Length: 135
Image (cartoon, rainbow, N blue to C red):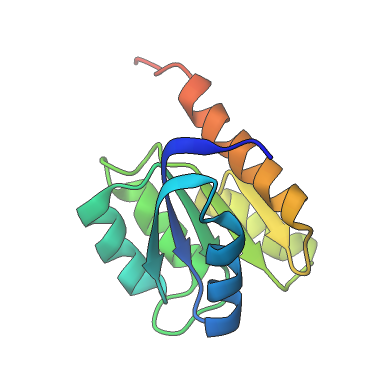
């Protein structure tokens, strides 16, 4: 297992069992894991704590993953934060919507923990390695 001990991960999922499972399997991989149960709480926590990486569920109450992702991308302080969307929907339309909203990756449930870890790490490293583009 490759650990990211200096990174803070924000886990956003409204299903208590899934949220708990994600935290349990990822807690040793990150310095800090922040929690949000829906899109509105995600926006509040992300603005206040500025995580290094966000794992965002697609379907949630109050504010779904797609509009949450768009809102995160509109915040200048969070525009470069990697976002990996997690969903039970395996349709091409949903994947396209996630990427168009600004997601860096898209993981379909059920997933393997190893695959999820690899995708989170790749998203984090990809954003860290990307040079800033000046106009």
